[in-house]
Length: 117
Image (cartoon, rainbow, N blue to C red; front, side, top):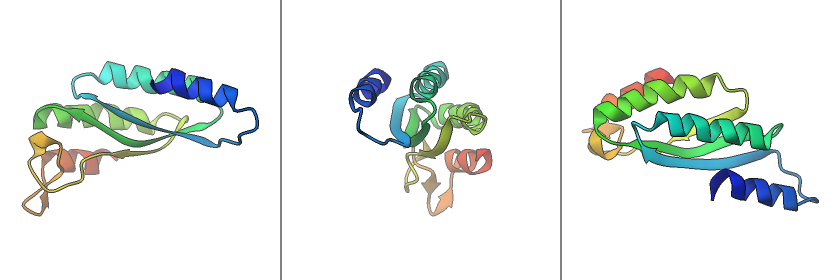
């Protein structure tokens, strides 16, 4: 549903006042092109409203997730149409499961996110 669903809703709601559009994104960590295209489309579709990415995560190995974070977070920081974002997975457990904390300490995924922001 994504961008086209929200665009149709916003266009149909002529009496609504909408300042920002909240969105989620989940897919494979290697699919950064889809991530960037999806949010570029959203920025263009909803301007001048800002985008709030309230959850996002790329699934895959710990190394794939680290690379995903190192690619998309700097891109997000450069987008004037993205006002806020938060990665999903700040939980205790294995990095390969999308968690950022293992045995009470940031793991490689958590470190990548903390240093990329």
